[in-house]
Length: 330
Image 1 (cartoon, helix red, strand yellow):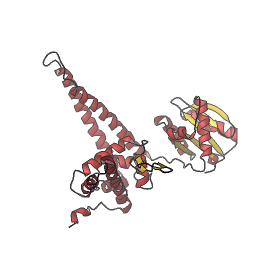
Image 2 (spheres, one colour):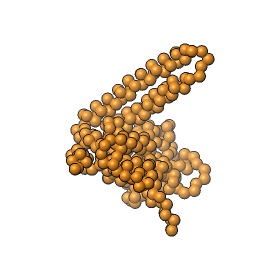
Image 3 (cartoon, helix red, strand yellow):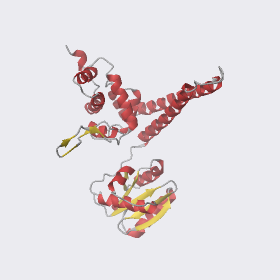
Image 4 (cartoon, rainbow, N blue to C red):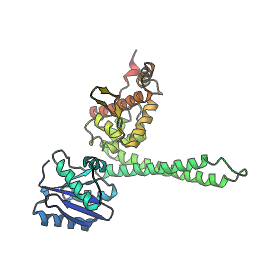
């Protein structure tokens, strides 16, 4: 990708620090619609270019960068929301930082990677809402777990019955959180049901053994209804289940998964794999055969995770539900 003007932006809650790579110019604007208008005005005045010649690059900071990305999308201006860790790792050894320096480093990153950067495409309102609801569900689950642990920890006491009120309060909170979790899940299911393409894919992927309702929600949301990843291998990299070679010269180590991953999806895939090997079928048979010949339990379980993922992508691509051929084997 070759664009005339590379613009690096360091996004914070209140303001945007902007660095124009070609002119080495720095300025700040407010992180709101008024500031966005001033941002474009300043760039056009400084560079004398058109908006189709611009490429913005900034870190994906969640809600702080959301308004900017929506504004640029509405103006049909190309932008790249890059992961903060990717930018940090690409810079090599650095010393010192502030918002101005960060904006300059982001602009330099975009300039050096300009031929390989792919402009960000916003997933759309429905996918965005699904991700927000699933994020809310995770918070509710954490609160529920804390209350459950609080009840479990009430063992030591001076007199019998002194912790009854504490248990009752926390149990009421657990019940309330359970109701809210159900409400969130029902809203997620409703959004998927009302979209024909999402509903089709959801029904297809939940036909695969091991894929339950919650994992199905996450797969629809984080694959952006199977449009954000070209194949199962690329999504396995995102989820942290894809093994990579580990060798140098004559030293050949074991292939390992990388720690950079979406931990929530990896956890759900792990539970799906553990559930699958408990049921009679090819997953359990394959897993047990590996253990019999001395293979590692976790590497064997990781293979089951990837088998599930590859079948999920296969049924979506094929457009027909999964067929368990093991049932028809002699």
